[in-house]
Length: 514
Image 1 (cartoon, rainbow, N blue to C red):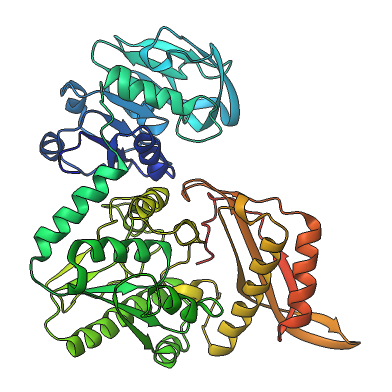
Image 2: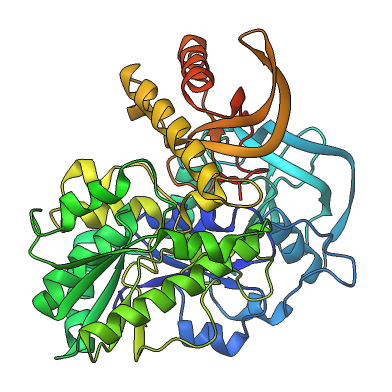
């Protein structure tokens, strides 16, 4: 990866920062997200082929809004500003940015100048996704307007000589019909990228780098059995062999029967030649979580307890130097990027305690998005059923239980989730879904069962369509499937008398509940 050409996304608080980076990587260009607090010296050291400024919720003309030195536009690096990023470019270079007389939100027809390098082979009228209350009222001197709508005079602009481009709309979202082609044009026509970001070379380079780093040291891998930790475990096994010990921690927050299923794959009877240890510590985690209802606190408790258990196991093994975790790039971003808001602390990033008793933590997948992790898994030879399995959060069912976590609540959500997954598979709709699961709300309501009044919990069902897990739409499941799931859950799961379906997309919601 160190030898790859690099691209930079500078974040100004936009909700689509990860999605922009993902779109760049889909074009085989390695890309990282950095906060707008990055210095120009750091940018020079990074030496990017190009830069994208993200959107953001602020107004560029307000004093407390994120900004950047206008000198960046004279560095000779191609820059594409998107939404807030386009307005910042215009504002800093002498254009006018004002509150729009008419705000635009949603699908919008944009008239395009197809002579622009970023609009080559794009329709002259293209459906794009708008989301703005401010607009560029007047482009800066030296800029040419290359896109407009009836109410947005500068929907796109450029100074081709300086390689500065801007779009008021969001080319990164799937609702912009030709957005991927626009980003591809910027990368290849303007930035002259070669597209050397390939998964096979990433896997090969990572194994080599891990082998050099570890030397003859001992390695402990935190194996949850999920996609990320499984791929990390097999990568480490190929790199250092029997120097690796995989510790599977059954904290009592897994899906129904999942502990046994993980052991069947990675344990002594499984297909992988791994040192495997299963630690059953369910009660320890239940005790730690007793009385805790704040989701961030739950995550941090689970994160610290994870580490403490692994430290104890490392002492039993003796002289362990490295801890391996299946951290991926969205974990890092959502745990806080520079001064950006923390969406949620991931147990293996923001949830780590201040002191960790290992020489170093190895996170071989830290730079990858979820779909890239799956590709890496296939490159490593993992079976497709394992690589393509449903994502499961590190803190487990603790964040699918709203409020306090108890052993009783865990059993409720395990049983409901098992029924839901079974019926989704029986109906044959599972292969078309990005993620689906049942969660236990903290709401209790009155019901009638067997002619008697009940006052029990409500289960919430979640199913989304997504390709990258950064944006998602609620899946429109067949009503007969939802009806069957509801009947079974209410009849078969104790203390549940109501089932609801979550129709919210991401954004504004996250895929998980907490």
